[in-house]
Image 1 (cartoon, one colour):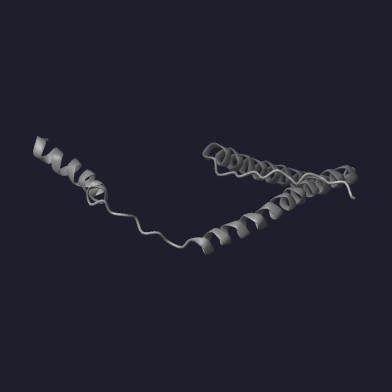
Image 2: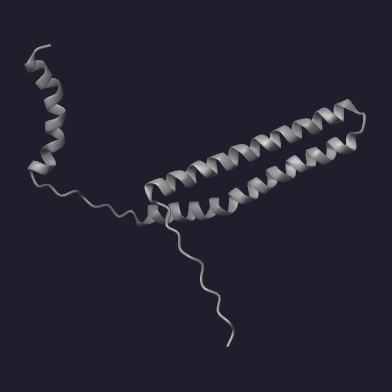
Length: 124
């Protein structure tokens, strides 16, 4: 591959990326207030939903344990109870893992804004 081909292949995209800087162009600003509000509302909803789903998975697992203990010698009931326990453990693992990965990413990229809880005040 000769030098002219390399310049044509690599030079054109690089030059097109530099055009706004050369022209001293200013990026257009968009009003994203509604989008930020929608994401905040979705985040607040998920903050309430995720602990509920984890709790539901724990209840599912405990229901399987209770059913397994109460099944006695019935192999069919034990098999169904074992399936409840397995799916409960899988659900807990998946939800907590995804939750942890999201927390790691938000802390890594600095998007997690933590506001301290209000200081309790004594009644006057």
